Image 1 (cartoon, rainbow, N blue to C red):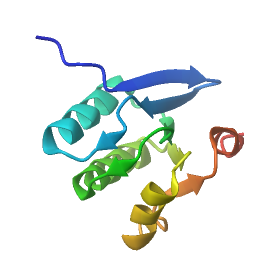
Image 2: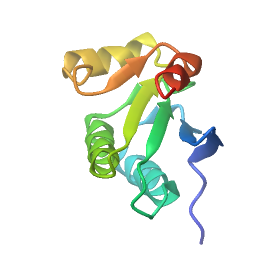
Image 3: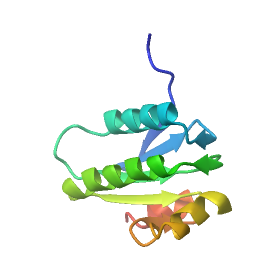
Length: 119
């Protein structure tokens, strides 16, 4: 049985934008499926990955999902690419601040601002 699509992916001027279909990304199965789909969607070649992770509609995330995002950032960094996060509600943004991951990730208010950082 094929996995349920958990993400939407689009390319805008060479920048991949991942948007989650799930409002709550916290149980282990969901975290694994979302993570697997994001990693599988990225280009397999060695070209720099330019990625925006759009949190529109996401209400809750778990600490294990933060771990997946750190692994994703490492993959992007290994490709000499760049990754930005955007569209976080106050709860999700608070998780990043509390864990000090707002220092590790580039976080923007909205998608437009993130896209500007790639120009």
